[in-house]
Amino acid sequence: MEPVSFGVVGVGGYARVHLHAVKVLEKEGLGKLSSVVIRNPSKYKDEIARLEGKNVNIYKSFEDMLENEAGNVEIIALPVAIHQHKDMTITALKAGFNVLVEKPPAVTIQDLDEMIRVERESRGFCAVGFQSQSENTVRGLKKRICGGKLGEIREVVVKGRWKRLDSYYERNAWAGKFIYDGKYVLDGTVANPLSHYLMNGLYFASMKWGETASPVRVRAELYRAHRIEGEDTSCLEVEVENGARVFFFATLCGPTNEMPVHEIVGSKGTAKWTKGQDVHIEYGNGEVEIIKDDGADERIEVFRNAARYLRGVDSKLNCTLSMTRPFVLTLNGAYESAGTIRDIPKRYLTIKKEGDSVSTLINGIVEIIDEASEQRKLYSDLGVEWAYPTRYFSLKDYRFFKMSL
Ligand SMILES: NC(=O)c1ccc[n+]([C@@H]2O[C@H](COP(=O)([O-])OP(=O)(O)OC[C@H]3O[C@@H](n4cnc5c(N)ncnc54)[C@H](OP(=O)(O)O)[C@@H]3O)[C@@H](O)[C@H]2O)c1
Image (tube, rainbow, N blue to C red; front, side, top):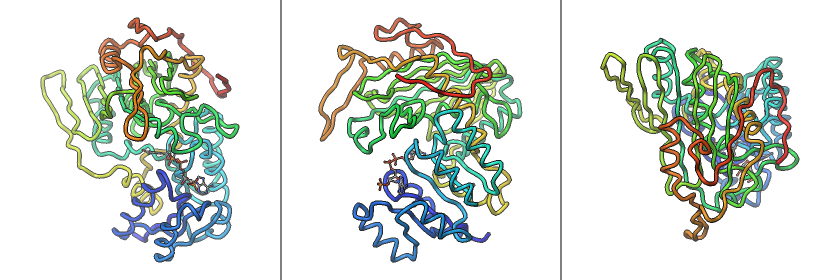
C-alpha cells in the first residue's frame, strides 16, 4: 500500500510516542512523517535538527501546517492537551484532513457530539487513541463476547492502581486540573490516565462488535489525596443498556504501578485479563481458553489501523469517536453523581519525599479496592472512613455537562 503521510502536532510529552509510531510505520513502508508543529523552537533544538535532516516540514503553528499541507498530509495526529482536542479536531476535519486524536477525545458530551457531527459532515475520519481496542487480546475477547461464548454479559469489574508522584502533576500546566484555560479538563483517573480501562469495561459490556455499552445510570465517588484540583481516586458503578453493570475502581495513590485488571462475568463463563498478559476464560462447562498476547505495541497498532483504514485495507477503525460516546457520558455521569471531589484527610495518607519529588499513598488503598471489587461495592458502601455516599445519576437524554466544583 502507498505510505500514508502524517503530520504530528507537537514533539514533547506523548507526541514522542506518536513520532515513534510513525517511524515504525515508515520502516515498514506504510507511513511517513511529512510535517510537525513545534510552537516553542528553543525548547526543542535537538528535535528540530533531527527532523530537518529527514526533510520533515516544521511549522510554528497548527494553522500554518493546515494551510500549507493540504494535499500532502493525510492524517493529522493530535497528541495535545485534553482541552485542545475538540477545537483542533474540528478545525482539522473542516480543513479536509483526517485526524487521530488522543484519548479522551473530549470530556463533555456536548463537545463530543459536536466532534461527531463535524466528522459526519466532513470528508475525513477521526480515529481515537484509546489503544486497548487495538490489542489482539482485547479484540479476541470482544469477538468471543459478541459471538455469545460467554453468554449474556452481567458484570465487568476493572481495577487500576497506579502511583503518580507530584512531578507528574508538575509536567505541564493542565495536569490535575478540573478546568484549564476556561475549558473542562477533568484530569483524573476517570478521564485520563486510567480512562483506557473504563473504556474497556464499557467495550466488554457490549455484545456488539465495534460498540461500547451505553450507560443508563451511574453512581460514583471522586476523591483527591494529592494537592490538586481534580480527582486521583474514584469508584464507579455503571448500569448499561443491556442490564449489565460495569464497576471501575481506580487510584493514582497506590504503593506501586500495577497492571490494570479486568474481570468479565457472563452467564456462560468468566474472563480475566490483566493488561500485558494473556486472557484467561473459564467457561461454565469447565473448558478453559487462553488468548495469547501477541506482544505487539498497541500504540503503534492504532497508527497502523488508521493508515490501513485510509487505504481501504482495514474495513473499520479500531476506535471511533462514536464508540467513545458511552465513555464520555459515563465520565460526565460520574461527576454529576459525585457532585464534587472530596479531599481525603491527611491522617489517611502517607506523604513522603521520593527522589526529587513527593509520593502520596492512601493507606490501605490496595485492600480497599480489592474488597470493593470483590463485593461489587463502592468505597462508601464498605464504610471506608474517608468515603462519602452518593446517588445514582440518570443519563437518560443527557446532552450537556456543566458543573463547577
Ligand atoms: N494513549 C495514551 O496512553 C496516552 C498516554 C499519555 C498521554 N496521552 C494523551 O496525550 C495527550 C498529550 O498529553 P501530554 O501529557 O503529553 O501533554 P503535554 O505535556 O501538554 O504535551 C503536549 C504537547 O503538545 C504540544 N502542543 C500542544 N498544543 C500545540 C500546538 N498548538 N502547536 C504545537 N504543539 C502543541 C506541546 O508543545 P510544548 O511543549 O511546546 O508546549 C507538548 O509538546 C493528552 O491528550 C493525553 O491524554 C495518551
